[in-house]
Length: 230
Image 1: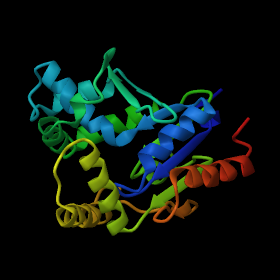
Image 2: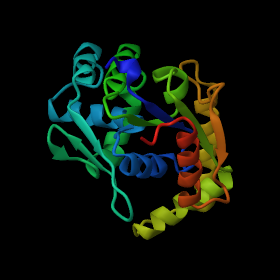
Image 3: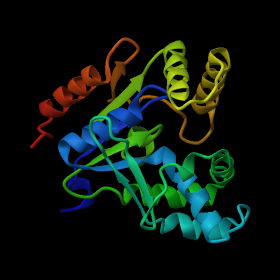
């Protein structure tokens, strides 16, 4: 079957909307592959560190980006999604401040972005793909059978992030988190390449006052309408 014959569900939206959790749960329920596109730049930064690549060496980084050996393993319930790079679970390693800073640097390189676009599209394999990100439905998989744009108010997203950090034993400022979210939204929506916006045919879901299970049920109902549940 051609790539275009492989079903894809895209879940786009701003940070803190719950799209990562939703994508993982949906992929686990369907038994489909999972793509966490936002993690790819962090994975590339980690791969560069592991292979001794300079973060200004666009040619070497582009080669690494094109051949990233990565898997996203979905998990239901209380289990956390796992990210595996070259056979090693790097779920925690890619969340460090150092790797985050590196990800920001490599993401600014046009050739790297182009290579990662092809790498993202390579995740499209049978029986199907759930792709989570900011431009999945608009740029990476414009022909996806179901496109979800998941959002929530900035205040709700800040509260969610605040609770997550407290549960991990970290300190945080709710006001500071809200400022960060508003600033990131502004950057994402106004960037020149692949700005954050719903695809014209996306289903918009505001998760501000919905549980993740309610959101999952809504998305499954939309998938059922399109005969994507098998």
